[in-house]
Length: 441
Image: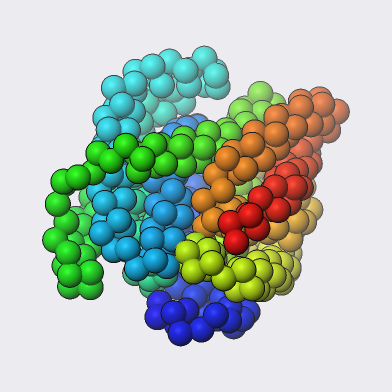
């Protein structure tokens, strides 16, 4: 947005205005998960929800593990944007598009091994295993489109065009909800329908925005994208280091949430299903709060590209404050509407009963977690990926140790207590590394 080229001030109002489009797109993402969960949770049998929980958790872990295709793109693009180096921006996008296709091909090859790992790790019933494999056989073919979409979102966030990045996600999520609902409710395709809905919506969205992005390069940057001069050693090494750090960080992060699913499966399928429902609240709040983190990423990179320390510190202070206030509001809304949301998501009485016993965790986690979400965005925008990696590794290892002890004594409440401690550990470790960003000025 041109707003930040003419001003070195980054007030709370400006951050909120830049974040508003991201709010709507970020709400759309967990809304897809809630709709899918609701579709499966109202089929009358726990196996459908359990299978979808396992399959989507694993696919989410795999796809989010390559979140560097978005996060690495934002940091490099935003700093190049601050220097007005448009050719480097386009080359960064093209390099990451190639990486996305290579990664997608590797995932497809290892699908049989993935199924074996799921059977060993989760020990699902025979019926549930069949449903899990049905989902994976379809969803795996959406991976190329989903990874390329990561790159496109990172590009638009990096140049502070949050309306475009948000429109992309909204269209993707909207189409996903429409197709999944149609295939499940009208054609009774159950788990297969949910996976197919994701596949169809991913490719429709990708085609639309690849065409738009090419046009954007030509009209705005006055450059025709070409796959030439991409193999520059220094650029590739920098990109590799950034992507590897974020990859390791994201693998650990997604494993942390997969660990919730795993621990719940060991207590029982009812608790596995309930935790899937409860995680929708956490995901909803995190994506909503991540709007500030996402919009801040581009501003942080832009401020660093301009070597403006005062603007950087102002963004950090104001973005953390608005994120915390928003988290308080989210928790208050959860407190008011918790029961109504649960009743919509599932009609199975035992799942409702167990879910109602865990309301405390859903309310207290968002205000505590908002600090680590925002710090993530600050470090990503600054391309301080080594620190992000180290902080996440320490936090996840501590979280696993806490969860093993607490689950043994508090059962399912122990899982949620340890998740709360995980958020605190993330904030503390990132706060420890904050001084390293200031060395850039």
